Length: 153
Image (tube, helix red, strand yellow):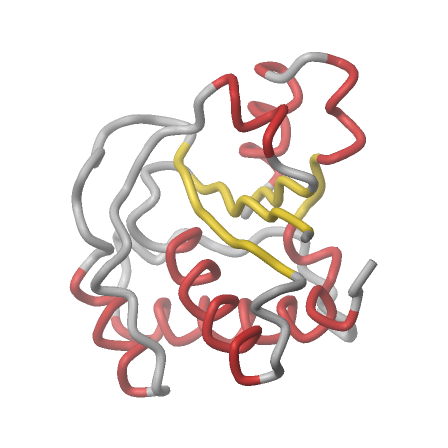
């Protein structure tokens, strides 16, 4: 079982979107026994909250359900427990490497490094924008998850 953690700032937009899509795509492909997913934030601003309603609406329109997910912060044990820790942007990557023990740095990567054909490194934060920002996040998450789910080892 490969345990994967998606990380953004508050764990209400980008990382739960990746988490929800990953769970559903893995189940559709019969990979629910290969991968386990979770998401967390670098900050505890929204602990216990459901994903942003705009993220939920955009995801639901594509057939993904995020409503059961709840925000939580990254905790020290995550660096031990997860095999792969995926940062939504370079700021999160820097934060994760600063907070993690050095022996776990090899687990930390940019999420979009799995997206073939995408030149961007960062999944942009849609929080302060409009509907199209949430749609763009969905596009990027779907692309990166295609690459991630192709790696079964």
